[in-house]
Image (tube, rainbow, N blue to C red):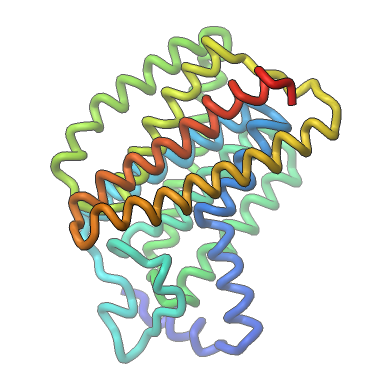
Length: 290
């Protein structure tokens, strides 16, 4: 284990570095994803939004399957006298591989493979490296965790994009492939216990069912005036945040201390957020013309 790298980075600790790397870590978390992927999907490029959403779902699911299989401890757990956890709220589950790095990398490189611009490559690479450094600086991952996650994230972003290119003229067939993958993975809901796996599967179910629904019953357009785009985005983000935060508080009062019930309700919550974002809300803003 490369605890020396974590120690070196944490040896640089000061107020600015704490703020900077906590901020970098934040852009690899759910609220930032809601803001960015929603904008891409509703306002900028529907297909790119789908690629980013599915890259996130694939990454979240595969990451947590590997995590449970390996069961590695985090630096602050394995070496409590040598590493400090500076972001406990974002260090659930096992250490290998890093969910933050893998998920973030899969999204930004998924975007790069779609956009195919040099500036996007350098942006994706720079931000991914910063994410790797942040997770080690914060004491929640080893070097091998983040390096493998970088490779996995790039691979997932590339693969999802290639699938969309291959089935560009038969997107319904691609959706059927996603459904088959979902069915194959679903029995793991009765085997794995990690909460992050349940949230990832909730996203997967929500995104794919919403995309099928949107294609069949909505088929919204980005060709609207700027003021409507702003209205669409602001209302939508508020709606998703209310769902994400509000349902979390309501559900927590129901499941209490039960880990198994927490997993079930978090699966439902993330499913609803994804389904509303990619399906229900587009139906609403198309129907009411905003």
